[in-house]
Image (cartoon, rainbow, N blue to C red; front, side, top):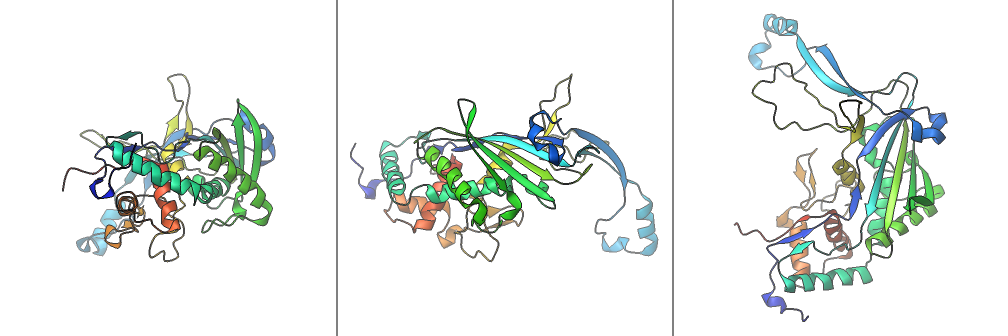
Length: 356
C-alpha cells in the first residue's frame, strides 16, 4: 500500500493501543525471611477491620481556635473503622507475587479507522525498531522489576528486599535472576556492579518480547523483611457509591483477591499500580528539577504533586510529539522517541477528538 501524501494525512479519529506490559495483581503472603525457599506455601496476608477512637488533629477554622471551643472539639470522639493488613506475630517478611506478560506488537494499534495513518505509523515504528530499538526501554523496565519499585510503600523502611524474577516457558523456569533491591538507586537506572549482567539478561528477554522475537512471561516474587506483626500496604479501593449515609461506614477499604463466602481472600496490589511502577522510566521530561523518573503518561502527570511535567505549550507532550513524527515527518530526538514508544507500549485511546 502506498503511503498517503503527508500533506493530506490526518490523525485517525479512532486510534487505540493495547498495553504490551501486562501485569497481574500482586498477592500478599507472609513468612520468615530464613524460610524463603518454602515461600510458595506461605499463608495469605488477610485484611481485617479495625475500629479506633482517634483524636482531632485536622486544621481548625479560625473561629474554633478559641481555647474553650478547642477543648470542646477535642472532647468529641473521632471514631473510625478502617481496613488494615498486617503480618502475623510469627512472621517477619512480606511476599508479593505476580506475573508480567510482555506482548509483541508494540506500536501496532488495536483499532484504527484510517488505513493511510496506520501505514505511516507502521513506517515510523519500524524505523524506531531498526534504529533506536527497544533495548533502552527494556533495560529501564527490567530495572524497575529488580529495584522493587512496584512494592511502593512496602519497600520504604524494609530492612531487606529481595526480588526474584523467573522467565517461564511451558510453565517451567528457563532463567532465574535474584536481585538485592536496596542496592539499586531509585533515581536512575544504573545497576550495581554485582547485578549488571543479570539486569542485562532480564532486559534482553523483555526486549525480545516487545519486538516479537519470542513470547515472554515473567514471574516476579518480592520479599520485604519489615518485622513481625508490622503493617503492610495493599492497594486501597476507591468506593464510588457510598450510599445516602456514610455513618458507620469504613473510611478505608483495602483490596482483596480470592475472597469467597467460605474463605478469606488475600491482600493484594492492583495490576494498574504495578504497571505504573514498571513504566516509571521517563527522565526525558522538561524541567526535571531532580525529581527523578516519573511514570510514562501523555502529559507527564504526577498526581501526587498535582502537576503535569509535559505541557502541550512546550510541545513535549505525547500528542504533539506523535503527531509531529507521524503527520509532519518531524522526527523527535532519540530520547523523545523512547518516550513516545513507551506511551504506545502503555496503551490507551489516542484518536483525534471531534470536539474543540
